[in-house]
Picture 1: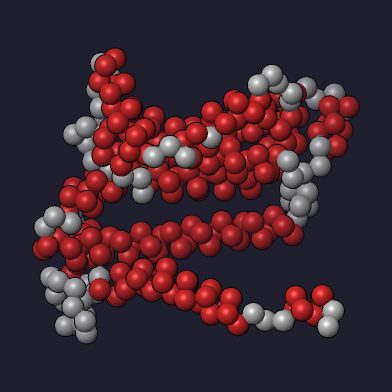
Picture 2: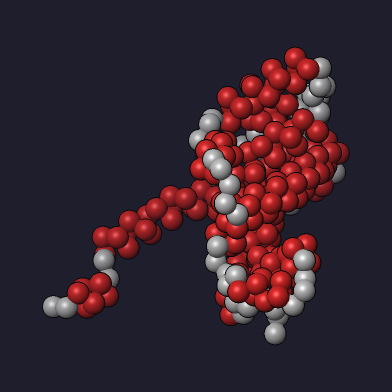
Length: 272
């Protein structure tokens, strides 16, 4: 039996493990929209009845709207700033020689391994000592700190994955470094930029610990949900909100995958 034919043989044990693993991950998630239509204050199965009143209640909850808008503002600001810093950092690491490159990169990547609760407490103490009031601005700063490493990892792979001769050709034709970046480099790495924006926004949107320490009197959506779970009568509204977030997340992921497939068909990034 050849090695190639052995590799093509289906591994039933591995396939069974994959199916069980995916079921463990996604079946509980699928129950969330199911129970959001249940006509009962508590989670019961089988369902007592079908209702959409929890969605109507959710859409009229002004506190939820305020928390959602806070999360959108923080997530948008954190993802844009973290991606900008990630672009500069990834380009510097992949394009230029610099003394102490490895220690610098390791320092930037530290938030990937440091527990978020430790960073949250550290930033809380720092802001308190220097007199910075806790608000959505401090939450945004904390989210930028934890998002930059993810952005750099995403963008470093993209910067290393395209033909640099196109940049050299642009430079030979008279473009300076700035115009070369915007006319050649940025369109080529744009799928990575978009992936970084989506990833950083997702990380910021559902981050709880950092927001819990740094939000002060304002609430993001995870803090709002945590507060609602203390009251059993609020649980159906939380399930409805979770179902909406699940649908939006699916649409965002589908859109991201569609862009990646389109980019794979057109690796030049020129749209031609």
